[in-house]
Each structure stands twice: as C-alpha cells, then as structure tokens.
Length: 79
View 1 (cartoon, rainbow, N blue to C red):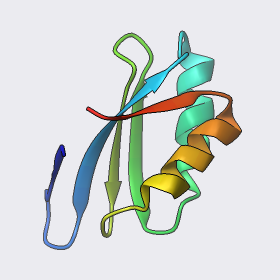
View 2 (view 1 turned 135 degrees about the horizontal axis):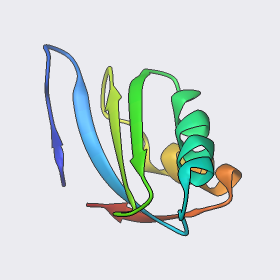
View 3 (view 1 turned 45 degrees about the horizontal axis):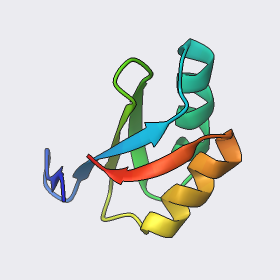
C-alpha cells in the first residue's frame, strides 16, 4: 500500500489507472475523483498512469474504482 500522511490527518495514495493517454483523460479522472468525500487534491499523469490522491482519510477502494470507471478508465490498483 502506497499511502502516507503529508499533513496531520491527510492521507496521500497513489493509484494506477489504465487507459489514460492525454490531458483530457487526466481531467476526466481528476474530476470524478475530486467529487469523492474527503478528497482535497488529485493529480493524474497520463504518461505514467498514476493518479495521486490526497484525502482527509483513507478512501474506500470501491468508491475510487467507481469514480475511475465513471470517467471511462480502469483502476488497476494502488501503485
């Protein structure tokens, strides 16, 4: 599991997402994940397939998977 805290109470998790190939893809994934409760920051990088999410606490992986699916991509798992 790749999760650590940056500031007191926040958790940073890096996910692998397949299918992203451009800035539009990054925006779609970031937009969906940003809507999850507790998410404070999302950075998606198409070239690596990695999405870094900062949240107030640990996120439910099924909720993350559903958000990535809604954006039209596949959550591979945590990086």
